[in-house]
Length: 103
Image 1 (tube, rainbow, N blue to C red):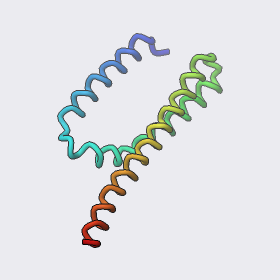
Image 2 (image 1 turned 180 degrees about the vertical axis):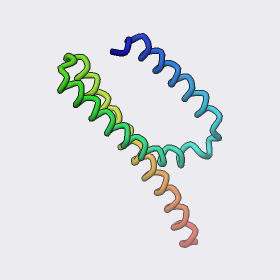
Image 3 (image 1 turned 135 degrees about the vertical axis):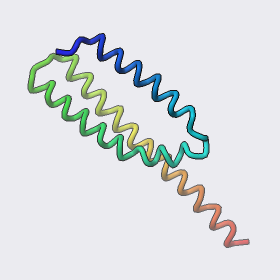
């Protein structure tokens, strides 16, 4: 079994690295990149479901199952939020076109 300290270390390094990568992206690209990340979030849901299933079948304990369930819920919220932002972005572009046509 992997030591929990290694897992926490990987999480912290990933969070810091992700912060510095996102910080360098220009603000004009944030929304299109976010909408493109919905596919990756879908893969995250599949991975969370698989990990939770393995934890359940292996009998790793209640904490592993709760953490897996929480991962599934948070990944689903991320997907639905991303689709909401994408829809809002598309509606903003649609309204500008309609206003120009009316004038």
